[in-house]
Image (tube, rainbow, N blue to C red; front, side, top):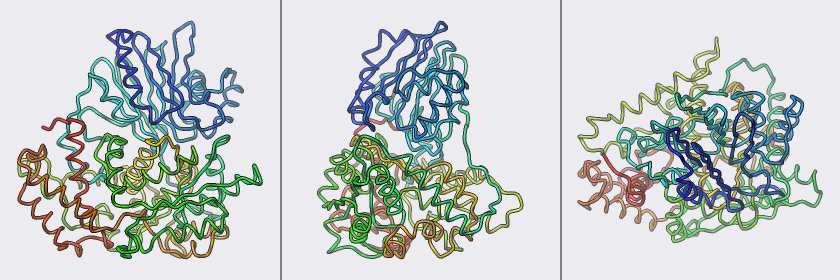
Length: 609
């Protein structure tokens, strides 16, 4: 986190920078550094993800022209190669710090240096000689970086709380962003629901000087013809995923992996086991799964979650010979964890969906510092049901959004006159469609599938990555995502749908990885991340939502049409809308965003319009 001000002397405000830094203690429990100059300050909390704490520390380099300073979060997976490139170009790297690599690369290649960096990272780099700061984020947005500009400078931090700790920033709800608060999958890259708070977009660098501020893109997908056969494609996928897993394994600290028993997580775990044992024959991988205490009594098979993970995870763990643990969470466990998940986000969250992941990562942190996950495979390979439903693909809208009731339908008449939720959704859809990298001569069906993949790699993927990153780092656990390796994504992006889907859902991935997986995993139906099915949990959500409606002093009262919202809640409570939801979705889950918005506004004292 940090603070840039081109008009005032920050030296007299160093206590504020220290306060901002302390808000990130959970993200970096191992080291702390704060540097303050006249017009720039950078604070950092470090997490040790190797045998040494040195690589995670910030760097300050004094030159005749001025000071360079940099700090980062996350990991550079090509740090050894980058170091060699710097030295080959005449640079000198004097420490083991990753942040020094960033500064030395910037000195040699200017702002384009980031194209040479591979990993999951966010960084801040102060260029003293030119009095400017660069804020950069990895290609897929795995690691977060928020900023709040003001006329004389800007604040930045890995989480909003770092910015909120500075008295220059006031948390105010942007009323025009209410649709994305109520449906986070609608968010466009860089958006937040707070006035003046932004996130550096994935694959971008923000450059801010005394006279200008602009964001430039350093990476994007490119569409080109694919000429490999199915067999060649499967082999290349296996190679690329194997390279990604191998590069993301940590050294000198315990390694773990999420393991649901599905093809995604099991593929990553299988490759991790192989890579670890190539380094050390007796090495073992710790794997983890979550289940719910209520499953035996209340689990109901649905399209999105046809079965329970735990038995498949245990079978896969035995097949791979991992040290496996299953977390069994009760409704009380989830409810107790929700306040911590809100604190991890600083923005409206996902209730039980955050809580179960938070609890799983809490358990994992007791056994490992770095872990791998199979998330993002569905977005990369096309694993969701809508990819196989022509009627959904043909509609000119987000294919994962349904036509049934929505919270945005219950906004007050005054607000809907100002922001039309349906028009807002159409505008967001149109903006993303205009950004799709096109392939000349592609037939209409393949062009549409390409659009759908691009849509999924935008809002829905950011939701998945945000949840994983916030819940893991709240526990001081670094969770890595091999399916987000940009070389793998660039290759699979151009594989035609006829090859990706050969053999059914994620047929290409299964062909690539099948020989390393147990047959039960290969033949298992796609099953989404688990959610608790419990009447007690649903009743609690409905009760909380009803309180928001009936409390005349509720801070949300001016935002909603009380009668329409109450009607929706009553219909959910009476189970009268299940048929209007896709894939057997839980009706009560519709109300999570309402409850989380209410708690967020209250807890963070967010002012409303």
